[in-house]
Length: 108
Image (tube, rainbow, N blue to C red; front, top):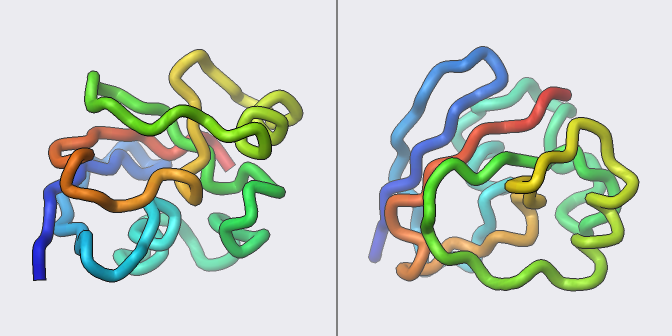
């Protein structure tokens, strides 16, 4: 099992540095759910299809992420509380390349 460290600031402002498995085809939204860092039913409502923006997060450091796909771009265009560093957690897959990623969950 190969884990990376990711730091997630929850909606209460509390920082959590968690182990993120890179060998299970998970994404950031699923990681937040697995560690219960957001109340049940408030993140990943669409199941990770880039259709609800409930997993919107703000990228806090310079870890290089894959480009936004058209679905993610379109959903962020319609979402609330969007910033220049907004991404959808369901579209950020856990890979060794994102080791050290720091993000903050957007308001509900």
